[in-house]
Length: 236
Image 1 (cartoon, rainbow, N blue to C red):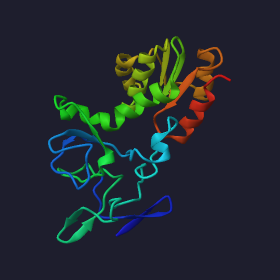
Image 2: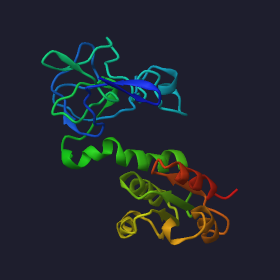
Image 3: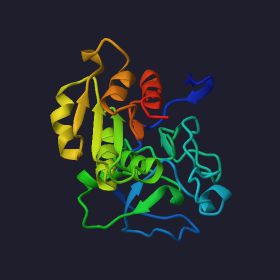
Image 4: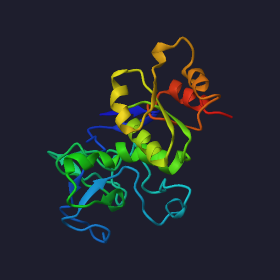
């Protein structure tokens, strides 16, 4: 069977999942960056280490291993490594972690300390690294700056922690669920805004709170309306 995503065919069956931790059981010919027994995190935005993007300081969107939600086969031979009763089962974003065993390109693995507990470190393979990296590597708030975080899930909380580490003096959390606010204090959030509590756009509320807008904003929900608000709440 197949479905459509963004106008492209998406083939099923497939094994979903992109966040995990595991131990390398075997390696293919030519693999040198990991070996049997290594503790690793699978990552859906891998690095071949050879293309222009991997060698650039401006991007890590590898020409070969960048995220591809459509692709369901391995890069090496265009075939699946999963099957049941002879029926091929497609891969998902190069990781397919909703499985006891998975097969991934060696460029989509990051070695970790074997002492790290897997049931906790697994979240570093996506959620934490996404938010923390967005703050520290992309937004790069300066010490004493103001930052707005839209969405206080795992990614948003990690982004807030990144802003705190960078030295932001005010970190404004924006979320529709007030229950997230108390937890967010543990990750550096100093003030909270619930759009439901206001009768005007949240970006205007934040602009008034910050004398014209924040220095940086990080959108962590994927909601288009929040994306607009995040853009417009930053000062000129």
